[in-house]
Image (cartoon, rainbow, N blue to C red; front, side):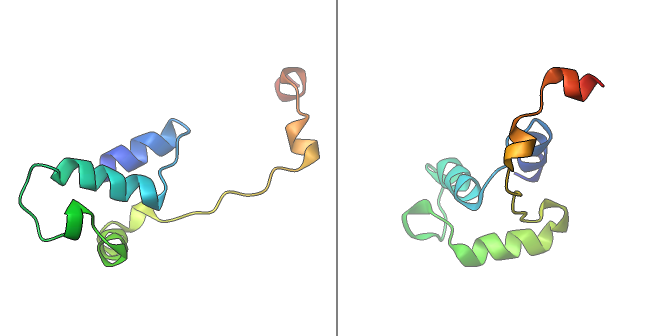
Length: 77
């Protein structure tokens, strides 16, 4: 799970809380577990982050109009 989260972020696809929970639910679909409807709750998510601090939750910054107008030429310069 941790590797999937980190690899996804490095490829430009950050995982959100809902993505992580849905992925765990899918993994547990055919396995016996203690979760209601095979879905981990917010408590599980919080303890997962405590166990793996390098998968911290981050908020993306706002994109300004100046940032959205950057061209390839500007980047290359």
